[in-house]
Amino acid sequence: MNSPSHAESLSRRRLPRWIALGWVSVLSFVAWRHVPLAQASHSHNGSYQVHISTIHGNDGTSTTPGPQDEQYCILPLTAAVNATQIANLIEETLAKMGAGQMWDGTGAWRVDLWRAAKFCNQYDSATRATIGIEYQIADSWASVCGGDLYSCVVQSNPVVDPVNGHTHFKWMYSHLKAQHLSTDVTRARKFINHETGHVLGLKDPSGPNDCSHSVMHNDLYSNYGCLDKVWYPTPNDVASVTKIQDRRN
Image (cartoon, rainbow, N blue to C red; front, side):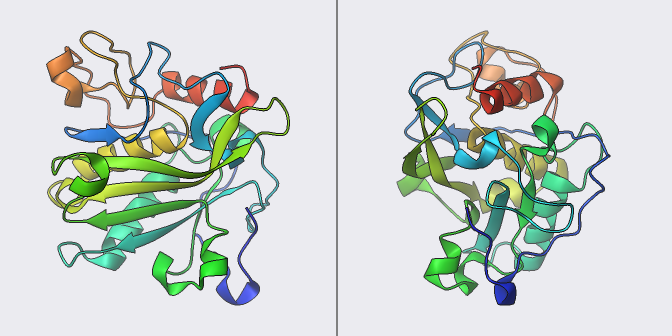
């Protein structure tokens, strides 16, 4: 990805890079669109891998994103949430939670999340196309996620990794159901972080008892026997994403 123009630069309040990374939560109804069910390793592998294409590298600085950083914008499509408050919550969840409770910094900062200064629809189409991740919030994503109960992630624009030739994606869209974000802050963080796990290449449980200490496999899948109450990305999640980044998955 290329950075937006100076006039439309991406702003972000961020923790210093020396702060250890971390991770955050999952929840009751989550879905992954157009993706096979999870394996025990809960990550994609082979020639077709559903993750954002930029996670293999990092070329930004502590104050400026580079083409290999993960820039994201937010697009509220409902009056059920306060646009500014929900944008701040997403940014806080991804990049301001501190050590062990956020995705930002994963894999020696190859996951380097930068919030755009504007909402997604406030950019011209060319600039918006340089932003790899969109968090879109609506009352229902039934037509996208396969049912009214779900939040989900959809991938777009496949590109080939120049190092080992696997397919990954330039654009990832996290479709968040407003109800999932508006009742409880911890629950909201679970949805945000679970769906971000999909953006980074992680999967849901494949079925009963496919449970690990993971934000992707927590007690929101209690019907599968998963009882872990974790709400943030765990060391297992960090290890899985790092393998994807290293092309060892």
